[in-house]
Length: 246
Image (tube, rainbow, N blue to C red; front, side):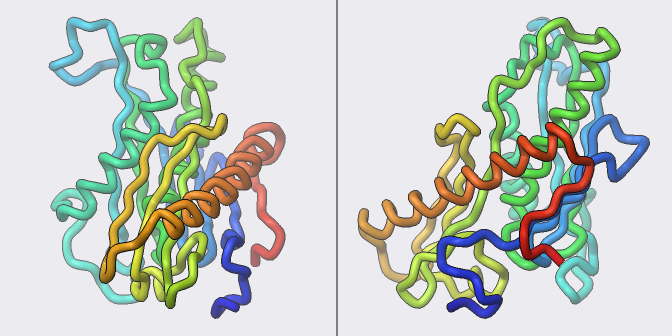
């Protein structure tokens, strides 16, 4: 049994609040356990210079942790990003572009800003899961205004962490579990069950395919639940909480 009472293959309680920033074209505050990330989507009528002649749009992300998000003040900010923040923002951007028809956006850029308000593990995966809804809402508003004729999203995307802790495979690690993990993995998948990205590292001893297969199985289960949660949220609810969310 884990410190919060979860079974090894259970997600932390999830809560998604849509429209959290009224001025943003799409925004979500996502809670996964004690981790909270604000994801906001903004659309600009321009693209990077290297895309100017293509007629294609672009989706990109920024990621940052508020100074007090970890309980002690963090140095730096998104305006002076460290290598970890750079890697995470690229991860988020890749995940979102994988399910977006960039031609259908036209010559526009969708910026997704992910700001970690409170960090207790899984901030990059929570960012992806929340950012998808913010992106969906922003593009839906654009479509309703007649700015696009074809809805650009081809699928959904969600992500989750999984790891090996004390020789046990665990889904959706909190900070204490993540910091003790012998193997740490972040997996992003589409709603239709295809992989977008698998990031995995053995922190100590190498791991075998039996462990890998079990981790992927746990991740597939968790992402399936998150995908269902996303669909219910987009279908009807501005605020949606999973059982057990406080």
